[in-house]
Length: 416
Ligand code: CA
Image (cartoon, rainbow, N blue to C red; front, top):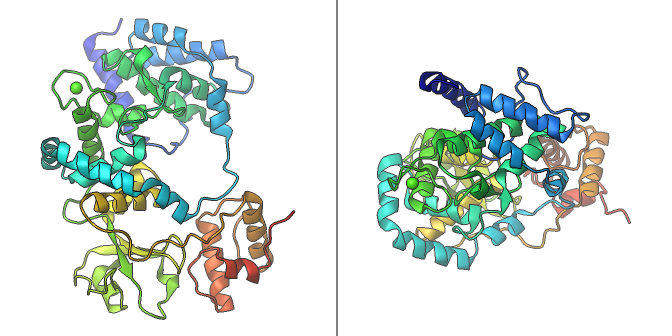
């Protein structure tokens, strides 16, 4: 048996490891070379045994590790979901309209009023304003309506025993076992998404372990049944990533006629510099003449909305590394706080691209001498940079966006 002090030491070592990997809730961390990982030949029983031993070595009580691992089952559906690849790219309009709609805004505003006292308390402790907390809650679980029904210990054991991202999910499983060992939730009630995200705000276990708090004073960190625990934990996590209470996430802006779109997605410049380039707020009013740095985004190309985003945008991306997600959080928070719709809604007449069409596009860019990297069917930063360079060379608006004009210019067409 571990003495309390030995357990505490193991805990802090495990916590340090968890913190290193806790940059994002959803993104995978780097593999740790010091621990063995699942191999294609290891069977599930042997893998479970190895994980149980590791948990005990990391300070989980043997009876907890044994009991949870004995009940952990292999879930083929989890592997199927992990292997799934979207057939089509999601357009910004599709993404945003599905997540920030009038029903969600109305419900968010009601919940902001209903939980005003709790939210004010969280803002006092963490600096994160209520509308953002409600926005995360809305985007993660539609305000607590859908937590996921997967057994988290079984899902994480399945993924830890699969070679694809074995170490990341092994670390998540270790954290889940520690949470169970601490008594925050019984193993059979630890439910979540197929990837192990849990409760009202879908925390991964390492983030839970590092940032979850007991805000209602019952001695447990319960992110499933206690809204104070869940939202206070969200506030603490955002605070730990450097939430800036002085500025918002960003804002919609209006770009002047003839604006140089090659400045989008690029460097962070002081607001005063953007102001000199003729950018105004979405209503045409002058931007504040301040030194705060901002980055320009045009997620739907030059026909869609433009945003200047501040430091908190990067904090939101620490929660989920997707620019679409971060814009959706900020926009939903603004709407919940009382703001109207975007002045320039994203165009809806843009077709989403199939993977094969993106591969065609990448191949065409490479063939034309614009390096889009190895064609993989994913519209990442390298592809966008190559698109922008091509657009500049051809006298098109260099917004880095694969619109119809670009596709026609590169003769990229859907193959039958
Ligand atoms: Ca509690």
